[in-house]
Image (tube, rainbow, N blue to C red; front, side, top):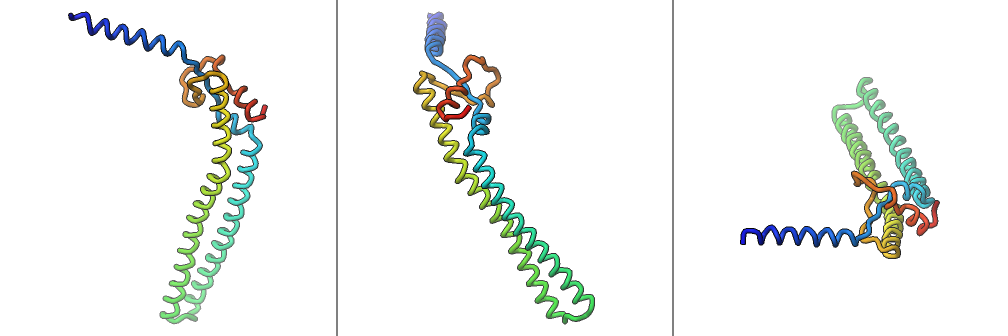
Length: 168
């Protein structure tokens, strides 16, 4: 009776070994595959163009705000502004500064949204190609090379995925 748990454990171990032997594994380097796609380069160029456009406007607005601060300080130093006018000028400058901070935050969100919009269809395309390669070639699992601690080069399916995507 004491040996029954050992026998059950041994049988379970043998069954799991047989089931793993029948499975086919592969891996890809998705970063390299993505880097080879012309759509990625185009998306990156579009995102960079938007980033430069937003940055240019931010820098112009920042320069304008700094000039307004300097002008206000000069007016205060020259005694041109009354205390009430100084408060009004400070409030206007504070609002412009807040608007500039909001623009910076909105710009970051706009960039992230644009990146998601442009990159997600490409990622979907690559994932579909990987799934198609797996189905067509009988792979039960295809892993990304980045998370593997050891990999047998014969299990690399990059060429199959690249062929599916039409890239070299």
